[in-house]
Amino acid sequence: MRRTVFDDDHEAFRATVRDFLAREVVPVFPEWEKAGAPPRDFYRLLGGLGILGLQVPEEYGGGGQRSFRFNAVVNEELARARLGLGPVRVHTDIVLPYLLRYASEEQRRRWLPGVAGGELMTAIAMTEPGTGSDLAGIATTAVLDGDHYVLNGAKTFITGAVNADLVLVVARTSPPSDNRRAGLSILVVEAASRGFSVGRNLDKLGLKAQDTAELAFEDVLVPVVNLLGEEGRAFEYLGHNLAQERLSIAVNAQAAAATALEVTVDYVNGRNVFGQPLSGFQNTKFVLAECATDVEAGQALVDRALQEHDAGRLSAADAAKVKLFCTELQSRVVDKCLQLHGGYGYVLEYPIARMYADARVTRIYGGTSEVMKSIIAKSIGL
Image 1 (cartoon, rainbow, N blue to C red):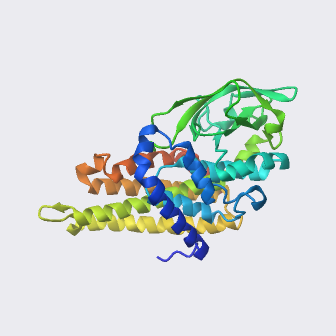
Image 2: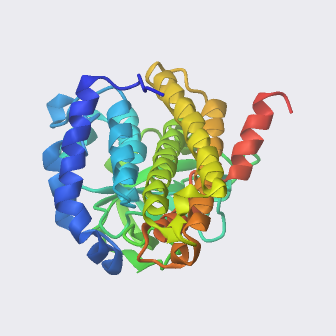
Image 3: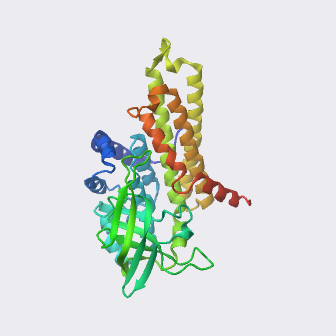
């Protein structure tokens, strides 16, 4: 079906992004997978194209866009090119909204030009080894001492941590009370801070070029001027951007499913089995017809969510529905596509094998499918 969510400006931007990825990234991406992360200069190139600062106000060197649809174009093109580069999405779709909404004017002047240009890459550190999805159980502490906080603790599964210059760290600034969600704050930690260390780049099942690391804080002195927003309100702040974070994941998952379908159609048309093209078997046709229908349904849901989000109407429950549907769809479609590749689908030199490994985590990060179901159930009175 014809999509109507994007206009001519979006499509012109899409062409620019697609050309850049094909020219500058696709040829060297296998090297990045072996290295476990892109080179630092890659982000400066993205900044120079305006991709990292789409929603940064013009007075701070950004594009001044209010629409999330330009971000969606970037996510779709990354998925189309089969590039697992989560730090880009974390930087633009997840971290930047916190800076735009809660940073003081002084902080905006200090950080936003570098964030837009790629000189300051960002990450956000919430998850801890012992907490997982239970953010209210965060144990990392930040104790006020004069004009600094003294930060101690550890974080894990932090996307983009290896190349990050600024890390938004969620820490407990007051002791736990009856309300476990109270007393949490967001501190912006500079990578050069003494006592801050980036641990091993975790060896993951998929997303090999996406650095995901452990962080440690040992008596790190964080200036009070690096407190984002007000002390003790982090849990409230974190909830504000969850809809966009989950929509971003859904856009990527949906686009990845569409790419898996495209890759598999090409494969079955070129593969001969028992003297005829694999595409000629009824099972192949039926399976890919199911996948095509799934992809179309997911696309309609994503496009509607993009419109609702730009209008300020995408609720937490709506975003949960979109993430749940599209990530489950991605896994279902990629699995069926891999099956049609037969044994070749299990060989990593074939794109579908890497897409299969990359797909598994989307039902976990940003809130597991089980968490999404709980949110949805609550929204319907259960």
